[in-house]
Image 1 (cartoon, one colour):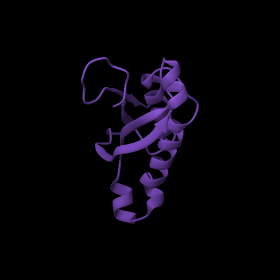
Image 2 (image 1 turned 45 degrees about the horizontal axis):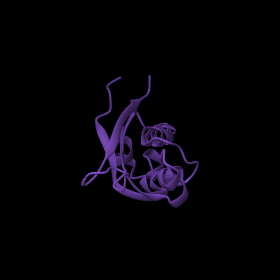
Image 3 (image 1 turned 180 degrees about the horizontal axis):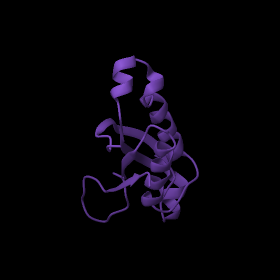
Image 4 (image 1 turned 90 degrees about the vertical axis):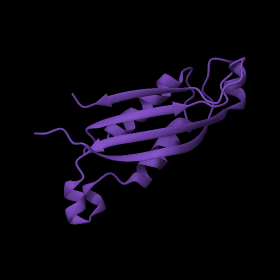
Length: 123
């Protein structure tokens, strides 16, 4: 079986979360921006024209935002891992790349963004 090279990409999902190592981050919360790219075989969906043969990206987007907005953790690496697990919960998904941006991170110098990116797949 060949590895799927097709993909669905969600870029710039926005969620308000309370993740961080500092008390003020947990208390006040901040915005997080999430990019998710799932790799899967889209040939069946393309020929059937049936959403059941793909990943419903609207449902995936809602699940990702809900995951980021709940259960505060210290690290955005942990948030990224949580999002990856959600995406891999869809049977059609072969691999997922997740980037979690934390543009309001408590960094003492001027910056535009800080993010972590992880790639996870099925064994």
